[in-house]
Image (cartoon, rainbow, N blue to C red; front, side):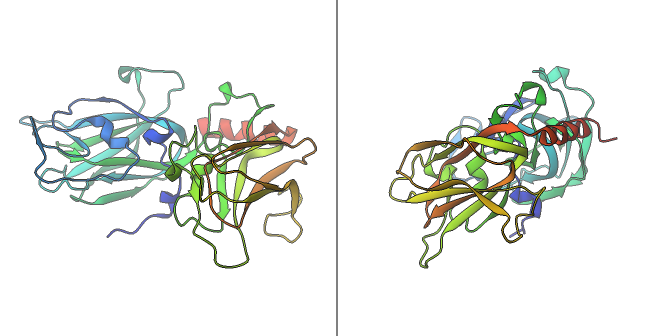
Length: 341
């Protein structure tokens, strides 16, 4: 079993669950390219043969009879700064590629595969092991929108995971009114008491949760405490509307919840007395989207969601506006990610 890298806790920017897509592959005779970015772990059923051979849960090309290599291009569902890549060859044993490389580029428009240019190398041509999670660190500080996987010379890859820090195109955001806690806007999970069943990053992921498994759920508490999760907002801002969504959680929704804020310009989250009330403890209903207006909220950089005593939450949305200094730092970060030099 391989150990997990720290950056694998970051979101998979390429996942179909967050809007990723495989735009093109030069060959997919044995298994479709779209399998590369499926959110679920790959599976294998022996002796399941189709018209082209054993059915694999991955992308598999034909055996090459000439020089060359095979490629697939992925549009990131969440453009951002890439911290690491996993080329997973699960269940590919005698048919995995011996080498692979990964490149990235940034195009803000809606390009066709032929229009993607200026590829930057993230992972140089590197050896792969079969039936293995091949993990590669990436030392990059630029924001990317697309990646290209090259395998040498041919073979099968089950999944491509591209972990990193999302950051949006600010051209499409109204900084006076947007979700300050959205993963796609650059917010991130800062801390969490428990993630036994699922990741708290699901709370701030795009779209609605399709199932209970796409939310955040804790273990059952057997003490007098409660569970919590802390979100670092996209930038310093004022929250005006909070949405606490318990969709799909029926017998395991929290009974109550509360929201607190912390302004790191005044005090760090771990300092005593740093937190102030945003939303007092309120009762929750199972399988329900709850909305609460916060008319007098102070500026904040971090928000803590307390659930009582435990349970599951599908989504957390915190709509509001950036402060003047929050706007300045947000735009500066955007410019730095476009041109780190």
